[in-house]
Length: 260
Image 1 (spheres, rainbow, N blue to C red):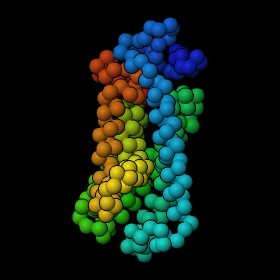
Image 2 (cartoon, rainbow, N blue to C red; image 1 turned 135 degrees about the vertical axis):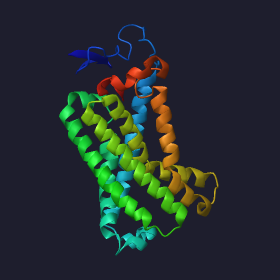
Image 3 (cartoon, rainbow, N blue to C red; image 1 turned 120 degrees about the vertical axis):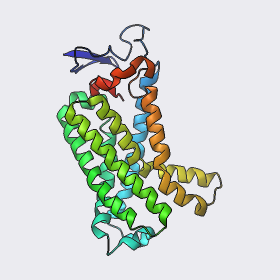
Image 4 (tube, one colour; image 1 turned 45 degrees about the vertical axis):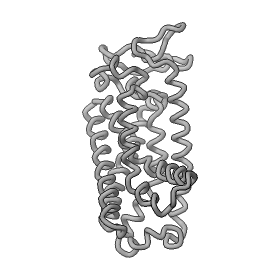
């Protein structure tokens, strides 16, 4: 058993014999090779903001469970009576997926409560796989036109595909790859959050609602996925520069591979 120092506390974690050195400085001002100074605090703040936003939107989404859907969600009216089960699955699992996914990121939770992390991960990925099937069916029955059908259908397929890859890599014990696929998957999950954020920013900038609502709603997953990939390649989640990390990233234990 090796120990990783984080914020003045020793956190036990299992490591392979060939694992990389600690990603954070362990004494004085000396930093491990490739370490990005100041990143841990910035990363923790980013996770807190992301989690807060996910909880707020999950709370807002929860109201759809008990309200009169036709009165609030006018775009869902076309699905009532035909896709009731799919709509039910989508509305009931959205809050669970948003919050559970955010809580899978912190390294302390993964290290201290590994069994909780595993079961929470199974719950999250299982819910995503189930809901992605429902959203694909809803997408194919969209009445807003081929652009909307295509955008939501691609999102549903990518959402299911990244979840399946994350599950497969975890079963294979390739936890570095597993973590990377989880990041990509949760980036797609966060379209539920960033869609609202981007829409309001554009409205504040004076862009007409009618000209931006549908493109932002349908294609929000594109910038999310691009940002996730850039963060993965930049070393944001590992605390190390991509070049110094090299190809060994995928071989590292998940506790040292993706950090919050």
